[in-house]
Amino acid sequence: MKNCEYQQIDPQTLPTPTPTPPVHQGSNNHKREEPKRPRRKWQVFPGKNRFYCDGRIIVARQSGVLPLTLGLILVTSGLFFIFDCPFLVKHLTSCIPVIGGILFVFVVITLLQTSFSDPGILPRATPDEAADIEKQIDNTGNTSYRPPPRTKEVLINQQVVKLKYCFTCKMFRPPRTSHCSLCDNCVERFDHHCPWVGNCVGKRNYRFFYTFIVSLSFLTAFIFGCVTTHLALRAQDGKGLVFALQESPGSAVELVICFFSVWSILGLSGFHTYLVASNLTTNEDIKGSWSGKSGEDVTNPYSYNNIFINCCSVLCGPLPPSLIDRRGFLPTDESAQTGGMDIELPALAAKSEINVEEKCLDFAVSCSG
Image (cartoon, rainbow, N blue to C red; front, side, top):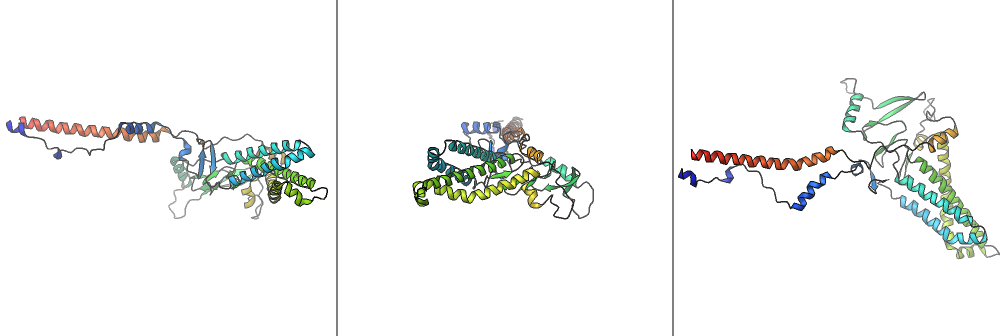
């Protein structure tokens, strides 16, 4: 019994848990509070996009030309209001700055709407949806080497349309949908990726893009005509064009910018007017999807065979909602998994302490015996 009184337990012989470094109370509280903060879907968006204002603004990652577009519009319009409008108001009419101001505001608003809105991005398939699609593709049970087909055929207005499988988004693309390699997204009614607006042009922002280029055509032609009139009036009475440019040097900059840009903008507006009247997209027109270039007798299944109805369906229909829900919150499963780690570690430590106490109690009982 006396031997038992002087025997001590060697803590090294007992399986104790690995000691963890002490954590300050403030940082511990911070770690516990962090999983409780819900994350929004734009924070984990898989596409190549950038988000601002808590997901309200979406632009392409490669949008370096957009500041150039906005800068050219602001500089040209600013020079017009500073150098040309005062002279034209004095010698012609005061309606010129009013018309120019309305066109300028309309151009800027439609440009920002095109650049900062969702073009019609389709959400990628979840793992369960992708697995279900794979089962549908490989439903023949054939064990041959030939891979299953990655296309589907649907009938739209008595016209066969092929749906292609997107290996990135793990789904069959709906009709008129294409995957943009720059944004890495499947865009519904994909028209093209426009570097000048820094975004894809699709189902949800095509009307803004069309009104932007049409209003920009009117603004450029209006400024070009006003600048030419201004310089012609200053060059009267034998003073010459050089004197007019010296009196208004900003008009020379406007003249050069408008002269080299008005033709391309007018041509682009005319081309998209043709597309709207035919209910086509740039992607379909370039590929010749419904032009019969391949020798097949095909027609555009999306056209109403009426220019007015086609224009109304493209430009005046209700704006479809965004499908990616970029400002929505993520499911609580992920936060629950992160929070479970904080709960599991104290439980393991408590279990280890109970085992140590039981072994000490058994050793003391054996000594007393």
